[in-house]
Amino acid sequence: MIKNSRKVVLKTRILILLIVIISASIAAIIAPIVLYSPDNIYDEKKFLEKNDTLNSKDALNSKDALNSNGFGFKFYRHLSDSDDNLFFSPISIDIVFAIIYEAAQGETRKNMHQLFEFEQDSEKRQLSYKNTIQKLNQKNPDFELNIKNGIWVSDRYELNPEYEKIVTNDYVASSQNVDFVSNHGVQTINQWVKENTNGKIEKIFEDNSTGPLTLMAATNTVYFNGLWENPFPAGMTYERKFFVTPDNVEMIDMMKLKNHHFNYYEDDTVKIVEIPYKDNKASMYLLQSFEMHQLKQLEDNLTANYFNALKPKLSEKMVSVIIPKFSMEMDYNLREILIEMGMTHPFSKELSDLSGMANYPSIFIDEAVHKTAIDLHELGTEAAAATGAMAELQSGSPYTFYGNHPFIYIIQDHETDQILFMGRFVNPNH
Image (cartoon, rainbow, N blue to C red; front, side, top):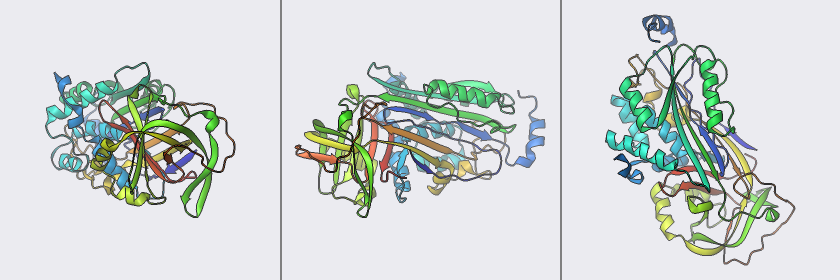
């Protein structure tokens, strides 16, 4: 299992945005957000005493209205200076912060827009998210993709009715009052997550992780289950060399699909191949530098516009694809990363204005965490594979995508054009 972690220990009562993704073929994303108020913990007694009594839209083109893909490439490039593997979900991070954006006012709203570039027309923005979520949730016998949103409000407080209406209607979120002082709220949310991820994620909140100043938790789950249109034969999985650098070579099991028709393009800087999931509802795009160990140059050009310009150049060719079979877990401190990217206001007790959420002072985000995991297998889902030892590549195809050196991968839904997940594989041991 490949693991990476960026964590910051913060004092007391955190806001958590937790997203967990399991596999390129079975994926689960969880995004809970917990908001706290007032502006400092020493006001807790006074604050609690003061509030003790508080116990066609479908015609909208979501491809034009959402900018989660643009955010995803900005997020990727910000992280790309490290030597780590990457894997995250742009659409899940975007949805959760769009829910928070609906409550943002003044400079906080402007600050969030600078990074996420949310649609400024409120009606168009809200309808586009509703339309996108509904499209992504369409049932298909060969392809499963489910997005669920929920808000969990402390039974001590109340949200602004208009804000709650927007979140439940336009973000298709369920709403429930829970007890955050005891562990009942945590247990309720954990059970909801377990059910909506088909048991892949059993627990996201630890006991005693919430308290009397917890205002709300906003949760998002995405469950993705897809088989490859052309499975990789298990008998073709062998241990091969992966060149982390010219001088650093690791052995890893690699899957091979020889002489198949794939959409493919290459020039003197990049190779890109599209590997479709069954029923062609989504695809994984693999990108690597044409020359080995030139990934940095490719990443310097990697934007939404660059990716969109590459896709029309793809054409059907006979291609052999050899890529690692791997499992990976990632852990990102979104508070740290998004502040580095310039979004400071919603995380600041002094600057945050989320007054559209509830009529309490100084609501702010104290912590946001993004966790992901991917399992890449021969069938797209878990499958037993025969392994052995084979040193060299043999292929009669005129084109080969050989993932024996660092590459980028992007999983994209075709109907909405939303990028569900993106990442890079640079080191089997990270």
